[in-house]
Amino acid sequence: MAIRTRKKQSTVRLWLLVALLVVVCALIFMLPTGEEVVVTEQNDATEQEVVDETEATTLVKAGMQAPDFTVTMFDGTTQSLTALKGKVVLVNFWATWCPPCREELKRVQTDIIDRFADKEFVFIPISRGEEKETVATFREQMGYTFPMGLDPERKIYDQFASNFIPRNFLIDQEGKVVIASVGYEPEEFDALIAQIETLLNQ
Image 1 (cartoon, helix red, strand yellow):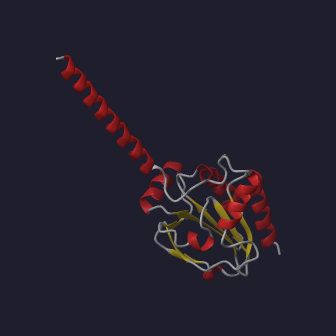
Image 2 (cartoon, helix red, strand yellow):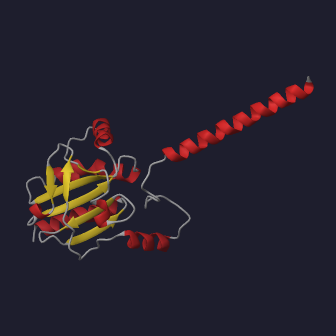
Image 3 (cartoon, rainbow, N blue to C red):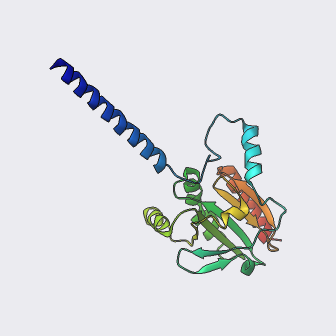
């Protein structure tokens, strides 16, 4: 009888371990995909290593011509970069699950859209690697109504970079990239706004 009880206990323990393993594997697969490291997160890498990796994953740098693209907007319309020549354009890549992206987007309506509403300026925030339904839920939760682009297959993002968000590419009236920034820092965002002002006043 004691032997049967021990066998039964061993079997229960085995099944508990299997169940725990399944739960751990499921949690791993449920983590957000497509992003190895968010630049603003703390990790074991040195500051120089982060800078080097960021540089290596930035395909379009300041001084380069911005690659043309056509993005489908949330409302179903399309927007192409070529059609915006003559205007200052800010392309922003973000995702709903990215904390620094969320912090940055909180400033967009007042500091970007409203501020430059009557200028020759266009802001294109592009959701990277997410379906429209995910973006729709996020917009509803946050109360955002400004235009957003969709890049579920990362076709547009992959022309500009291979990793890391948020990313901003400030493009001048001739289609040249003036600023290519990664991550979100309030001071850096303020400098970006100041550069938009400078370009519009030229």
